[in-house]
Image (tube, rainbow, N blue to C red):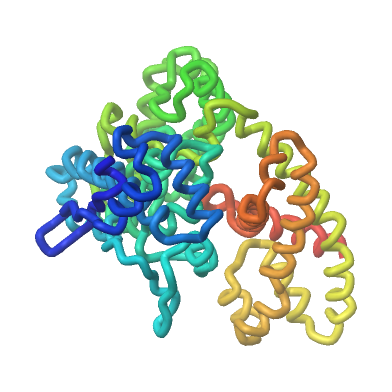
Length: 431
């Protein structure tokens, strides 16, 4: 039971274990049966349920201890694998993940603190959260995977840690996932700047474009067959299908060359391409793909996309018709929506329409509109068997709405136009 009573955190001397008497006392008095058991998913879920139902700090404190151990293991494994080549420091890495000192209160603002309870951490604003354990626990969905794996997923996707790695020329992502997450524009920039090849830029972009849909299908088949979400490698059949006119080994070399060029573009380092055997364990995995059963991500994506499209079709026409009445009063109003649909930032839009950014933000009203669309889509989705669990609690419903809203306003891939902006562009073009 030490994993529920001992917290691993960063100190001036490095990562150290701290015995928390309050956590140990809680286990001994409230759950003495746990003392003879090893850490398990069942205990995690029982403590999480108690933390939610009683809104007490001590069950959550035990879980904060619990998740610190897989975080430390991931940090040390990553450091041992890459520090010689990339110069990363374990203390610097730990500062992004093991910043929890075991306090029973949490800072809510510059002036105020509150008890470190489940309701409090869920009420904190989005964005960077300290300690990192609060971010892990408030987002944890036990229907997707266990707490240790969720903790590793969250630290692996920590934007600040990824930025630190990037400064050292390290991208913890396989070449194949990197290709999947790169837009044609990024591929073009990378190849023009860093690739010396007899192939033309156009042919390399065409190869990358063909790779994307085949990769998605191959990954789905790989997950069904193996139950794993990482470690996929292209076989000869895949490479032949990708380019029947080319030797498959040459096709693979071209893909790897494109990925290397993308790494150089993103990191500014000439020595950042990682050995595939090292990368296999670091391919980013969406938490939704970790469920051992349930529908495939592609099927969920279709349901989500259809629900959002219907919600936008129902809500946005009336919204934009009201705005269209005012276009004649100020030409900048229509132009602002056109530029928004093209993917420009609010700052860039403000410069082109000769208004302040606050004016643009108020005009576009993205947060309100995207939230209303997300709520309407969530109401529809909760009728589907795949999403029925989202209607069983307020927290699950809120997570669904937030996920849908983020999907509306964030591009799926770098360089893409988010769905809400695409819809606005289509409507404005019809006026």
